[in-house]
Image (cartoon, rainbow over all chains, first blue to last red; front, side):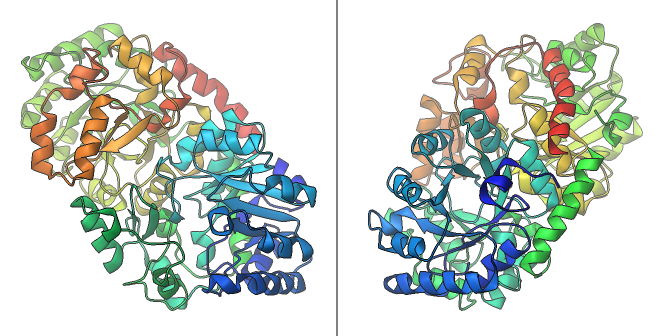
Length: 318
Length: 318
């Protein structure tokens, strides 16, 4: 497939980025994606539910990834979790990380610091105004994520199909599309909309290298088109598998229940039990709407390779 | 651009369909789209007063369109409404060639319409609905995503995830709808496996559309975050944010039941907003792509520009 602007900028072969799924995007997954020519991304708390131990975990994950690949990979920093504390960032920098993805917070807070240390910044946005703000803050690339994506979601509810072209028209920096992409068709569609690459989370959960519990992977593979639901509207919006937990939260929301009865915190025990222990019935199992297109657990490298092969076939047929 | 099965099926030059927006998909608009090589669609309620007879209005609209074009056009009928059988009679008597059915069971009228020689397009918003429509014998399905304006599916599947999943599940051609307003969207829809597109909001902001100028202005002025979903308990509806939508959103938050919502919203709210131009008190059905629409142009120019730009977008993918 064609090389886009972000391929040269990030030093990768294919413009396919693996999302940093909290708790489960570890070194093995990131390295496998990078080895296949994409960009793997490590989540700071991969396999480590205790956030107070995340510093050691980042170091461990980075070193492991480096032992598995010599190609570039990134580390993700959720800004609202680290706030203005740069201790985790400093660990990543001292370990030689050259690319980070940031999200869920103000990009002006750390972008200049990253740049001072020669680190490239990809920032996650969900509206045109956030993309414009991120560009002003100096980020190198925006990842525009649509409503169909799994996990934490934006209250503006803009879908990938409408978000991408509007962000592309509003900023000069490259735009990466995220949300609803699971195969070569989604990759070609995203590039048609003006994106220079894609980021995928859900598709990479169902891979052999991902730390996710086998039952969680199985739930994604078995999911149909209507298997996910949004909860926490007006609080912290979250897309996950429709199960006992989310059905109950949804029922409360529709009945107008007070906020405290329907709020779920980020990286709570409920996420840990679903993602790492496999309780997909009562736990909070982040999942994008594209799960209905994911039919098997394969290696992360195979995900990348199939997308690239399919892309060329699709574009030839247009 | 490439000819698809949709072109052959409907006898049109390019697979661009104008949605049959209630009240405002008038004969002049439909004829202009068909004359430009796409497929125009009439709403039986186009331009009429609440108290007018919908059968008489539909007959007038069909005859007017036939006076303006000799090319095929469609009529959109809402299966749920009480006058449906009489409207089907009008379509058959007046020799309409294509019908778009929505919001209801496709098993009810498809056979009769097909026996009378009409091509039937049915609007769906999930894989299951698409399979039922195919079993009912419809000629093509219109897969409409969450970003679309007006009444929306309960499952909130976006165009990006809905289209490929339906393409995989049925053999009949799939038309993508929701979030499309330019050639980028057209190419992206094709990349996802669609064989045509349907657009509503883009065609409201045209010179031929009978929507009130104030409503067209609101579309032109809106940004990416200009629309929202209200009435999730009754029938999720996407419209421009205004006084009316804020009022319904507040009722949604309080957990208002479907019956209460129906009583409070009342009939004719959308007519008030869209035809009378009461853009604060009325309901303005509008898709999430409105932020990308910056001018009122002729409907023919919308079609021609998309066709002209198509090859350039595809070339950029190679």
